[in-house]
Amino acid sequence: MSPSAPAHLLHFRVSHYNEKVRWALDLKGVAHTREALVPGLHIPRVRFLTGQSKVPVLVLDGEALPGSAAIIDELERRYPEPPLYPADPAERERALALQAHFDDEVAPDLRKLFWSCYFDHPADCARLATDGFSASMRWFWRGIFPVIRPLFVKNMGGDPDGVERARGRLSSHFDRLESEIGKSGYLVGDSFSVADLTAAAVMTAIIRPKQFSYPLPEPWPKELVAMKQSLSDRSGFDWVEDIYARHRGASAELV
Image 1 (tube, one colour):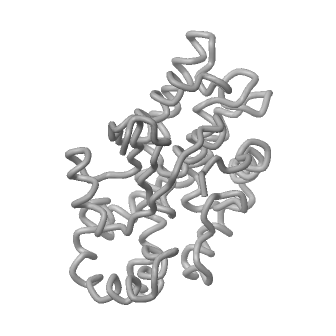
Image 2: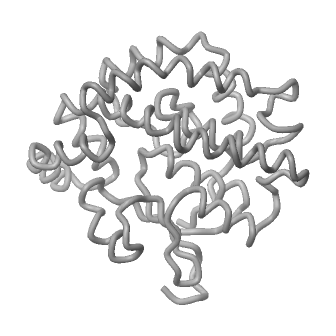
């Protein structure tokens, strides 16, 4: 990719980590291209570019930058308006701490719970993983699913004990979110920040507001429907939907 090329995002359509970066790019109006990858089959490409196997990866001026927090940090440096980092040093420190909390403590649990609703349904899992790709890719992915399933489960700690621990922490994750919402309706100060973006994007693993960039293939597994319904009376659930409605905005993707 030449230095003059637009930013190029390698992402999973379904992922809440990837949604963080899509949202930051869109919010800042950064014109970019997107390339959806198929989970599992993405590893050689991403490892060649970055030396690791996780997405999102944003290619900027020929340099491949992995990780949602690192990408947002670079976007904030290059495109400071509208700001995601509060100007006040104390508020900025708190916003970044909340980003780290939702990235490191909440997101892995929600990812386990989300995928646990699919792993026992090979057809649904293949439809989800290859959404937006060809039917032949879907059949290929379903064919290799018995081989890659143990790798997926191991990679995300999605064994039965891990999923059960994540389920046990789910309510406390919403407790923490709700305790952080200030009188302004934001997590830090009086305006939208990286803390709000991160918390709302992470919670989409279960909530899935209508403004989420890529709707899940229908029908959803009954386990995921039940999980979402069990949380629908939480004020944190309403907060996520409200933040999305007010701040998700239009896409800056070049099509």
